[in-house]
Image (cartoon, rainbow, N blue to C red; front, side, top):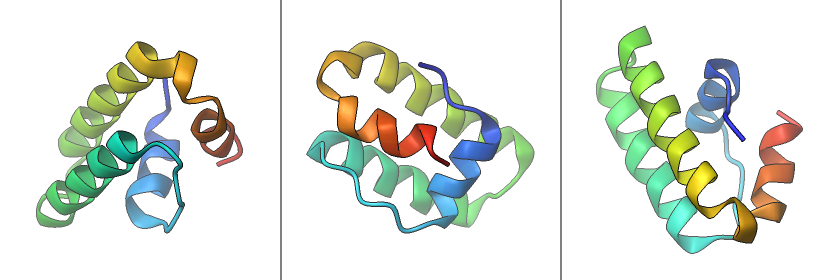
Length: 71
């Protein structure tokens, strides 16, 4: 599953709770980076990194993928 920039923006500016610890840590890191540099290029970089993580670990991320799909 690839996420959209719109979904990524909602993740970076929202308060969703994700069940997978490593995914939550990645999102926390991305939120800190995006808070310092909220340019469209940075948003795309965050989207690409998170999408890659989701593709790699999608088999164990069903609950978190459901949350993202509803954004």
